[in-house]
Structures are given as C-alpha cells and as structure tokens.
Image (cartoon, rainbow, N blue to C red; front, top):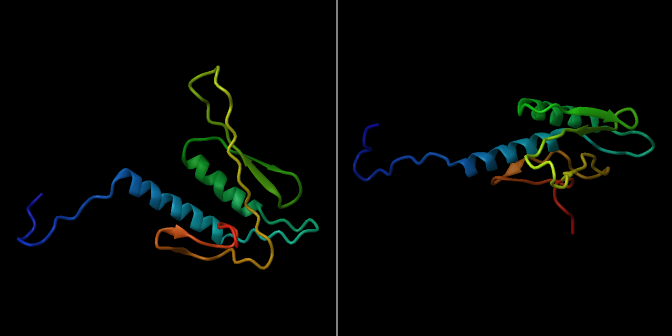
Length: 122
C-alpha cells in the first residue's frame, strides 16, 4: 500500500465493532420496514418479519423453526447449543408486532434505528 500524499490522513479501516454495529442497524431497519401492525381480532401480520428473521438465522448456520399460534402470527425459535452442559439455559425473546397508528417504517438515522415499535414512547 502506498503512502498518502503529504497532509492527507490515511483512510482508516472499520473495526469489528463498527461492522457489527452497522449490521445491527441494517437488520433493525429492515425489520422496521416490514408492516407488522397488530390490529387485533386475529389480524396479525408478524409472519413476514418472522420469515425475515428465520432467513437471517439460516445465513448464520442456525436451523430456525417457524411456529404459528394463528394464521399470520408466527414466532421464530432457534437453538444455539452451549459449551457447558451443566449451565442454565438462556432465552432471548422479542416481539415483532406494532400497535396501530405507530410508524413502523422509519429509516435508521445517524446509525440508530428509530420508530414507534423500536423505541419507547414518552
């Protein structure tokens, strides 16, 4: 690699934390753009988001399973085996539905994902 001209700072490579942060913002922004409005009365629309999450887990060499409690109301389950068989299990849980009237499609801004379903309202 050649040296930059005098007075020009060399371009810094992004570190692993910055790459991971960008991936989290992309994943979250993609999920926020999927309409998961829960209008009640059985009108659930979580399945497209569940399918997206399952696809991303599959890309990470996991074997996700979609479970539907009702049409359109899908959950994703995936297991990551631990290294200590005597250790307690850990459950990571999140929900994908959003209440009506809240924006579910706001893009990421300044490296942070913002929307009514992704941030608490005050």
